[in-house]
Image (tube, rainbow, N blue to C red; front, side):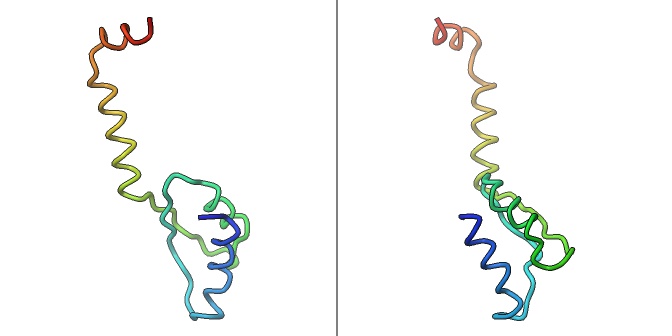
Length: 79
């Protein structure tokens, strides 16, 4: 999500919905979370960063497949 859009959602949450978001699910794009961290919409109250399970699954699966790949196959591709 775009950082400006996230900022608007967090800033209007108290006035429009009378609530404060305590967590934020990210999908690898750290720009939005870092932007919210800088804006500090709730005056010092922390907002936890949660990683999307699908994103973690994708990255971990790719890393494991690379480890499983035989060394000789990697050498053939690089030559």
